[in-house]
Image (cartoon, rainbow, N blue to C red):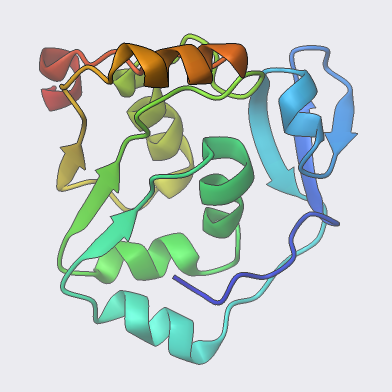
Amino acid sequence: MPARANLSGCLKSCCWSKEPLFGEAACFSWRSHHVYLDHPAYPTVSALHALRTADLVVIGPGDLYTSIIPNLLVDGITDAIAQAQNRVFVVNLMTKAGESDNFRASTFVERLLDYLQPAVLDAVLVNTQHPPVKVLQRYAREGAQPVEVEADVIES
């Protein structure tokens, strides 16, 4: 993926409130349904070349609206990813409070595909094991919960 650029100054989120919110923090206070940049961002030539010629592009895991999607908004990135040999999405193990509340694995995939076009996914990697109770309790204090997997929905 391209070198991580500071996109927080140009990242905007149009939320259920219909009022644009700005920056990464905006994605935590409302459930975003459309994230965009307020001005173009450009990747390096070497980043585009690396993506186009990659045998495999691994997307994720990470915060969908504040880490993964902003990189896909950079001009030319999704076209370059589409030219790679293969693309796999690693779905998060847990939801993130305020950003992906109640998301199932299929929701993560659907939302990613909304921004990934014209690229498609060749595979989706999900966790089907249950974390230990102690781990679940720690995440629950942060408002996170395990991502439910419906393999049949993802396969379609």
